[in-house]
Image (cartoon, rainbow, N blue to C red; front, side, top):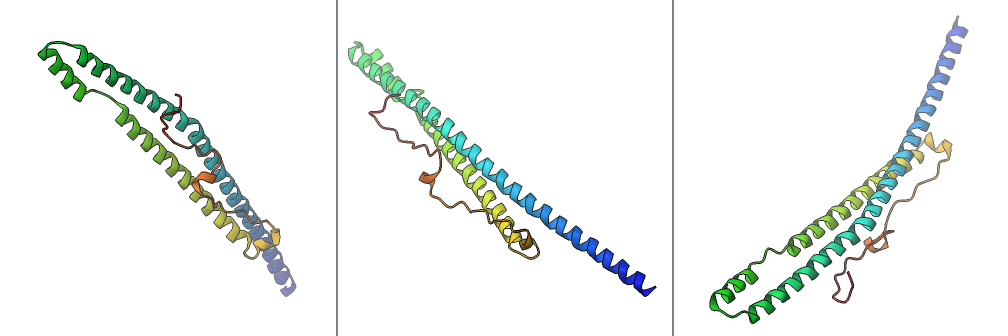
Length: 174
């Protein structure tokens, strides 16, 4: 009777050990997949920045060019117009034009900030998942599976793949 009890305890202990090892393995794989998913999110945000920012800059430059041309034409028109009322009217219109480039610059700035914040957040999520994964695979009994550590992301903004400079040079063509 004692022998049956000991055998039962040993079999039950074996099942517990196997079940625990399976659970640990599944947890490792889950953390690994979470880190890979976070890396994918970083890639998506970098691609978004790479595609979106140049188009926004191009649009803003176009608006600025248009406004410069408009202001130049208004100034020429005012200097060629005779009559005090017309000159006064054009001067008022010139001083308070409904131009949108300042709003577009603010929108560009907000888009840049949002995109960079999304990249920072995705990078943080990736590093957090890598931290969980690396901590788990280096603890016992998970170390028995011999998974390798995943690297953390550590780089400056300009080292990002797909870095898009945002310069507004006068000599650049739109």
